[in-house]
Structures are given as C-alpha cells and as structure tokens.
Length: 533
Image (cartoon, rainbow, N blue to C red):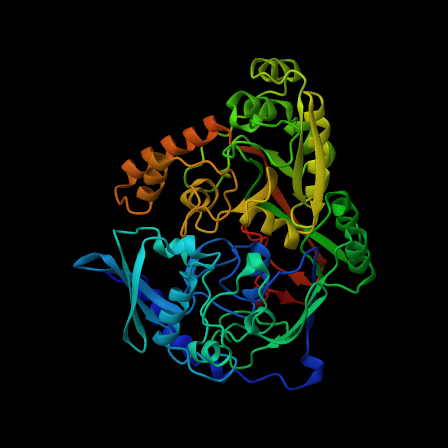
C-alpha cells in the first residue's frame, strides 16, 4: 500500500507556499559564496554517477525522492510511493501537483517517464541504479507506475540522485539521450539546465564559476529556509587559495577542507568547521583480468592475476601511517569497500591486514616476483581528500616490496574516462553509497562490466556466478536471506582482493560563523537548507 500518507497530507497542504512574498528589496539579498576543489564535469543529469555532478545539480534539478541533511529519505517531486497491493513488481508514485520547471512548463508524469527512461539509456552513468526496471508508465498526469522484472525492494533508495528533466525542453534542444561522457561529447545539456529545483542557472563557466539565483516560484517556499538569494559556486583547485579566500571573507563556505587547515580555520574568530563521517570508501582497483598489463615491464603474463601479489599489495600499504601522516586523522582505515552506516557493513570484514613488509615480500617471491615489477598508478589529484598524497605514499610503500610504481595523477575529469574505457591497470577510486545499501557499490564497482552493471569496474575480471548473486540482491524480499547473501558476496569480494580498500573519509566543512548547515553523510550540500545570519 502507499506509504507516507501523513506526509502527503502535510505537504499537500503546504503546497500553497508559492504565495510567500518574493524578496524584492536589495537589502534582503543574501549571496552564498561556495567553493570546491573540482567542478562538476557536466550538467547533464544522467551522464555521470558522481558526487561532484550531484552536488551541483541538486540545487537546480530534483529527484522524485530526496535524502535530507541527516540522510533520511523524504518526499521531493513524489509525494508518496509504494507497491500496488496486488502486484509486488509495480511501484506507484504520486507526484507533487503545481510544480513548474524553470522554463515555466508544468512538471507532470510525462517528464517522469521520459527522465527515468533516459536514465536507463546505455550512455547513462546512473543506469545501474535502475537495473531491474522494465517499464515506466504514465497512469495520469500525477501518477506513474514503475514496473520491475522482479520485486525490487530497494528501488526507492536508488532514486535519490535520479533527476527529473523536462521532456519538452530535452526534445527542443536535442538532448533526449544522455551525453556520451567517456568520449567527451558536447551537447546542450552539458552547459545548460532546466530543472524544478530551488535555484535557477544564470551562468556557467566550466572549471571556474557557476552562478544560480533563487527560484521565486519554488514549490518548497515555506518548507525550507531558502535564505540564499544567489549562489556563486566557484572552483578553486589550489587548496591554499581556497582557504585564503575563506579567511579573507571572499567565501562563505568551503566544502573541500584540506586536513592541514582544519585547526587553523576552526580557531579563526569569524569562522568554524563542521565535521562528520561520509559514507564513502577510498580504494585501489587492479586489472587482474587482462593477459598482460599495458603499463608493466612484465611481458606475457599479468602479475595482478596472481592473488598472492594482490594480497602482498594489501599488506604493504600502511593505512595507519596514511591516516596519521597524510590525512591528519581525517580518515578511518578500512578493510572493506562498505563504510559504516551502510547495510552490509560488518566489523569483521572491516579488519585489514597488519602492515608487514617481510610477509608481503615473501608472498611476492612465492608468486615468482621476488625482483618486483613496474606498473603505472592512475590517480586523481583534485577529487578526494589528499588523493594524490595518498597515492604518493602508496608508491613508497609498494617500492619496499619491489613494485616500482610510476604515478600518473590528473584531474578527475581526465581520470574517470581511463576507468570507464579500461585504459588503466592500477587506479584509485572513491565510492559513496547513495542508497545506503552495499548492493549500490557492488553493482557499479564489482559486478562484471556489461550494458547495465559494472560501469566503474576496470578489473576486467568476470565472475558469472557471483554476478547472478549480486543481481539477486535487487529482487530478494526476505531480509534475512538477503543479508546472508550480501555477507557471502562481501566476504568473497574481500578474499579476492581485486580492490584494495584504504580508508573511509571523514568530512570537514569550513564556513563563516553566520552560516548554519549540517554535514550531510553523502557530502552533499543542499543550499536550500542553509541558514544565513
């Protein structure tokens, strides 16, 4: 049956909030100047499964269902949802009435059908989240049915970053399909946007500045603070420059706080730092599936194909040293891809091997690589907290067991395509868990790559039997059976060591003391929640 009926009634009654007086006095204007170290590589809402994209687009576009500042699921463009009483494979969504796109067009079921089908396109980076959906059907202007191949109990959890687009706008601007991101296609949706969100795109300078203004017709007026009348989103790649701008008063908020500056900012009279854990794991991936590594000096075979080599790498990386020296304490060393707070996490799987160079060397020798080998490590240098420094430390650790690593650190916009196109043998990646369930990670990171799953799996390893088990997670409705299966899969993932977990990030947001906003567990800032004194 349909859930959230009390919420539906409350929100329906508050739908008259559009009558809230519009700010017209310049004295009421409250700009919000926000900086990050890396820009969203595109404005196309379905192209990239990326926190940077979601972080910017949540201001402009909206999903059917939203995770709030505490990570709780709440209504957005859908007021209620639930399985039909007689059909465990059909979800019904009741849409919010009276919502307008920034263009002035009315949001309706047609836009939901269009958007979900667009997000299922083979070009869509978010397509894995809708794996199992077979059709989306309009019932009436405010009702949509989503039909699944089998029961899909986690569908709602998967929808929080699937944004709704205007079908009319997409057709008029020839963007009915997502951008081909890995081949750097340019489309109208890459630099332009038309959502239903609290802020309207005013101007866009990629890798520099994006300006948005308050949507005076936003349905959420009266429900959210909406105190920022203008949002200036700046990209400042240099960490010292970002912090200098915050200290000088040029910025109100810095999302990517360098760990070395946390205490300095916290001790500055007019500034403060809010902290909290993030549901994100930082790890390395290894190409264990190709017969030979393209970037290695070993020819005719693949060192990473030997589990002993992978286990040696796992043992040679000193996570605690990274935590103390590189991260300044702003990390939690980990032995699993699944962070705490996510369904499937266990303390047992989170145990990581003790740093032991002698034992790692013995494993290398046992595998036939006592003399080591060379390989390239692809690493981002502007995405995760101290990402390049972590990779630099890893180069040193692996050098102690004879693996001569050549570091190739580049901006995330250039790093991601190397993973998507299988052009890397050894790579760093971080993965947040938007659904707060481990299947979200497994489907994109561990499942063999095909048209639906494994978009970010560059290991080239295929395990058909385990793929079937991962797919079964999406349809198993018996919680006890599902949890048992999930634990079995995660134990296998850990044992195979195709991925080497390093740590989970701890977040620190720096801001003026007049700014009030909680650290959100997905590292998502929703400006509509920000209070400005």
